[in-house]
Image 1 (cartoon, helix red, strand yellow):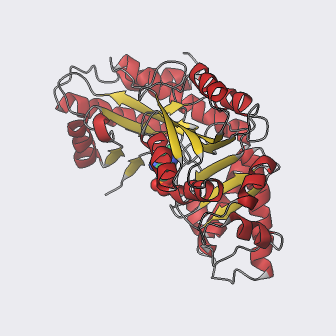
Image 2 (cartoon, rainbow, N blue to C red):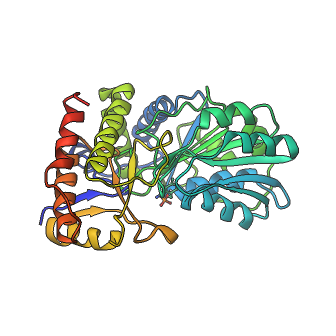
Length: 380
Ligand code: PMP
C-alpha cells in the first residue's frame, strides 16, 4: 500500500537523494571523498549560517548531542539545561550522566523558555560552563528564541549549546549572529536524509573549552575530528553513502534557496494551523512560539489521539506522530518538514477529517482542507 509518512523524523527522502546514494562505494581516504566532504562542509556552513567548523558525524542526532556534552563537560561542572519537552529533558539527563551539576529550568511543555528566567539564572550563577537549549522542541512543536538566548549567554563565560535536530533546514538558524557556540543536528528530519548522520558546529569560544577537556571519550573526540578535517578526512570510517546523500540533499536545498525553504515551511505550518482551527481543534503550543516544522494538535475532549492515529494508519496509510510521556493520547503531531509540500498537507488534513468523523468527532467534512487551500492561495 502507498504510505504517507508525516512524522517529525525520519521524514520522506526525495527520490533524487536515494538515486544519488546508489553511487558505487568508494573509499573515505580517497580524493573523491575529500572533494565531496569539502563541498558538504561548505554547504552545511551555509545552512548553519556559520564560519565555524562543521563536523558531520556518523551517528544519530543524539550522538551529535553527546559529542557536545562529552567534549565540553567535566564532572562537577555547573550547567543550565532548559527543559520544555522530551529533548530538553535529554540534555538534562545527558549532562547529569557526564557528572555535571545540573540546574534544570523546567518550563511548561507547550510553552517556550522565558528569557527573563534565563537572564536571572545567568546573573545569579556566574560559574555555568554551558547552557543547553533546544531550538525546535519536536515533542511539543515549540520553537525557542535562540537569538534572545544567545544575546544573554554571550555576556557570560558559559557556552550556548543548541539542539537543532528538528529545525536545521526547516527554520532559519543563525549560528554566528545568534552567538551559538555549539549546534548539534541530525540527518533524518528537514535535511531529508535517512537516519544515521549527525553534525556539530564549534565556535572559537567553545574550542577553548574543548581543547582543555579531558573527559574520557574516543569516537566523538572533536579534537580528532578537527585534526582530520584539515585534509577533509574523518577520524573513522564515515557512512560514505549517507554523505553522498547529504551532498545531494544540500544541493536541493541550495537550489531551492534557503529563504524559499523557510518560506515553504512557514506556509505549510500556517496552513495546518488554520486547518486545525477550522476543525475546532486546539494546538498544544502557545501562540507566538509555534513551530514551522511540526504541529502538535490536542485531541478533542474524550477522544484519544491514539484512536485517531490508528484510523489514519489502518484506513488511509497515514502516519502522524503521537505524544510522548504525559502527552501520549493527548496530542497527535503532523510534521511539515523537509521533503514536504502543499499537497502532502491536503492529503493529511483530508484524511484527518475522515478519521475524526470515524471516531465520533462532529466534523464538518472539507472545512480543514478548505482552510488549507485558502492559506495556500494566499486568501488567508
Ligand atoms: N533532538 C530533537 C529536537 C529531536 O527531534 C530528536 C529526534 N526526534 C533528537 C534530538 C534525537 O535525535 P536522534 O533520534 O536522531 O538521536
